[in-house]
Image 1: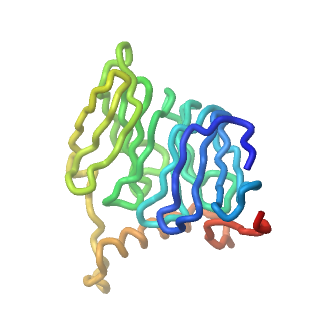
Image 2 (image 1 turned 90 degrees about the horizontal axis):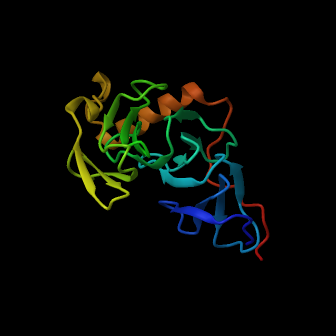
Image 3 (image 1 turned 180 degrees about the horizontal axis):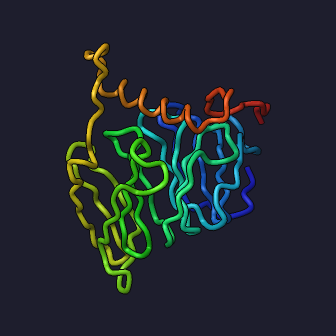
Length: 218
């Protein structure tokens, strides 16, 4: 496999152990397979500056988010050349992560010291929360992650400091089961919520799939 630009991030598929994605300094996102050593499975021009993070959704592994120094966060579906959603945050975006408790919530941090929390089920265009965590004059936020159990987000900055931010209750609301399906578990409800959202933005018909494996094994 020959790369024209240096890789800037890597993300392994949560279920398919031979599939991984690489973001590069020139904004490309390459889907790769351990089965092929000379060709990419798929490539898209994801951004126009270095890609800093690629992260799969916890409830649907055909959906992933990417962020870049071009100020943008994009939400993608495997097999598509264009993003489903795109958000401009006004500053280089160092990191983006999906929430482990909600299929439609993700958070991003920027070089101007802010944390953005989005819930696509609430608003598909604007964040539901923006919080200044550090002074943009002295520090930049570079990493962010959700705690898997507690309602907190941890951010890292360029000075090596970790900042812990608590999520307010309205940012972590669970799905309510419909009256005719009271016994449906929370994970299934989250999958249904995301599927309903995707049905509104997809160009039908579209069949989801991780990769199109057409290459011969080298």
